[in-house]
Image 1 (tube, helix red, strand yellow):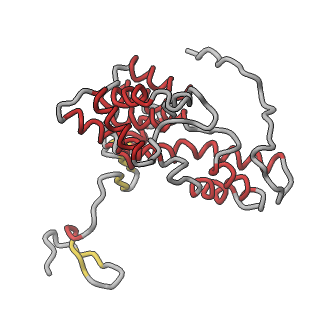
Image 2 (spheres, one colour):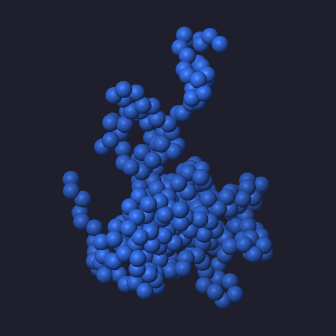
Image 3 (spheres, helix red, strand yellow):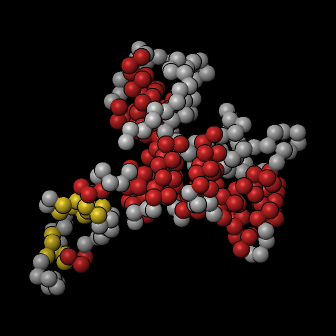
Length: 280
């Protein structure tokens, strides 16, 4: 085959391919002295876009608005760490006790994510979309939420995005909803999860289940147009610093090969304090 541009490329099997036969990527272009991320020079992105804005650019293809950029930053911070008891933290700490390098500890922590730890974001987005399908059929949000809740409870399924083993009111979820309202990013998904929260209410004498951080991020990501798989990626990205810090502390403070009981720990860090004023 004669290449259209006169240039042929040899693959690993020794066969010749034209430039048009090569596989394609629209993410990053690497050329001598040039790095383009979604078409933008990386050296120009540095110092001008935040980490959250850059992640949005990479996942979604365009630079976000300032409001969406602020929400991305808040979502990434909301998951940064949640103490010593989550399975991902314990996996990282147990790996650290063996003398494994930090990269192995972080990898072990990431592999600790599953359907019940980090997987609720995608499940909740799909759950909310089912409710919005009912709304598009002409029903109100209240009616759609009631139907959705009753169908899930009748099936014996746990409604994703609600309830927490520690919090009766997840402060992270409350803050994200506040920001969505203030930044004018609140849309149908947030309205849907609010309606579901009301529809659930107290049941059988039990206190109502609050929207947790997974549910809040599912609703916000739905309104931002971020697909479920990408929303789950945000959880993984945001949790890595916390996992690394937990593994580092394990090595710095404790002897190797200790048995770690998550219920037998106590916090001895700084007491509650206020953030310093930002420098101008």
